[in-house]
Image (cartoon, rainbow, N blue to C red; front, side, top):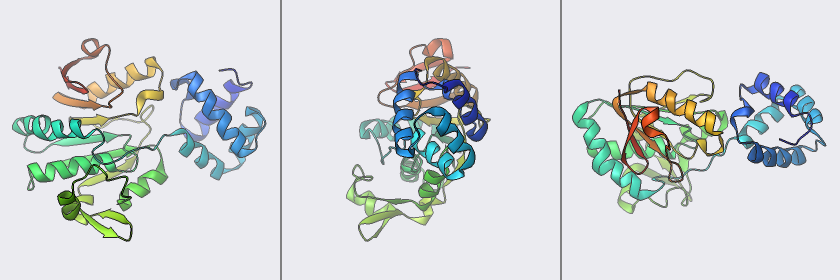
Length: 259
């Protein structure tokens, strides 16, 4: 990190938000900081740190800019098809009521997608779906369950009729499906994790983290998973030390926790 005053700025951000910037890759963090400083009209990190200290609105703006909220329903459709065809049925054979966690859920597309697949597989099942994110604003949007045509481009017309209500040029998730997902704010790098999770989705969340932060996160995910539970990662991610971290690969991007 070449930005002058970064150590003091990092400490101030940790105090104000609980986010440890040392867990993020340096070059990417530097680019993002330079962009948001320009937007805020701050010539340097010292000035920007003072601005954050005196303005809760700027703190919120910083958090929203730092967290990447890009998501869509059934992102990587082939993997969600595999989830419905093979992964979820196998988990349901092991346990009738599943505990599912979408970590870094963004606008809710991911946990709602899982809720939809479960509804088709086991409509009377009493499954728990927890969805967490650090960004409070995106969590509010997720609870609203309102999406654009682009957000649901991977959803078939039949599923749209069943699981959405059209409102103008947007689509709202039906109340029955929204009620199946519980949303909660969480800092993955600092807050406690739930336990006895059967399916844990953390996709395209850790790509900006350092390798050390990723490894620690995957170890904590392993502790959160039940024996035989599945970790589902993003299409650009892989666990290079899967066995060392306590996982075996089921298929690309799906890993089973061995305990």
